[in-house]
Length: 432
Image (cartoon, rainbow, N blue to C red; front, top):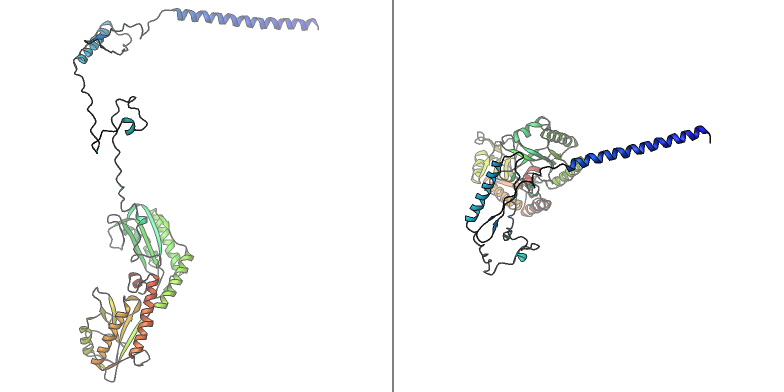
């Protein structure tokens, strides 16, 4: 090892030793400063203040006084005032009457002793909570009263308004009520092009029920059902009609900020074809023809017979027999092209009359058919006519009973089985 290397090592050792010595000196200096600081006497705000002696009352009990923090820099007179206030409080406490003892607990409902604390409140020790009042029996909660709108999903939609078996129903649920007039005006132009009937139904939250509404409605609704009829006597709903309906409902939902639920197009079209096929199989109109034996029927006699039977002449030139509720039962029309009119009945005459029963639109069709045949016979006796079928063959009793069974009873039984009773609200819509 050279002399240069030896010199450098010695110089490094001296530098390290110097740093060590300097650190020890700094530590000693800081320790001296700390000792001087902590050795200086200082006033303790809490401990150096004199504590007032307890005030002894008669009977040997001392009135306990809590220590009070005096404001820093307060004067002697403030402390004296504080002591006077404490003494006055002690004097008043001594003069106050003792609290009466806690009254005994009232007997329970059965007249027995009240249950022990641990029995009344499991898990609570009475000795550990002497100030806790006796437990109060919990009252049973009254059943929640549901508003008419809260359970609307459970309230069935009346079939006389809309029915999934007859209508494609769009469901719209909104946050706020919307006036019926605004709903109807939204897509009026688009929906006017539909070739099938459309029905609007809303939930009336005041009355708690579904109701149909139109342009004259003054109500507002948050829940809407819009139904497109699937079929009528012109056939099933077309794909174009349903596409137009679905687009209009989507636009309506967007405008009203409503949640929209709509059946699929294929489902609607399949259901419409099936419904139309069923309707075609039960759509019967039974006609009983009364023709003259040679002498034409005078209009005045026809009028007298019809009015005596309770029939009313309509604006369409047809007499109609109604039931007690005003429902049409069967009609009487001219066998020839001209209809009946009040101003021409006096001078007109005809060679035949037709009694017509619209089977799907009449309840209890077999009884109505019997009434119609009896009235036709009475007309025939008075006017000198004969009952014939469409081929001008006379109708005897066996033929009339066959018509009654095959073309009245059976179709109406099929309608009843499908849930579309003859003469009901759904049947009147489908066979309009």
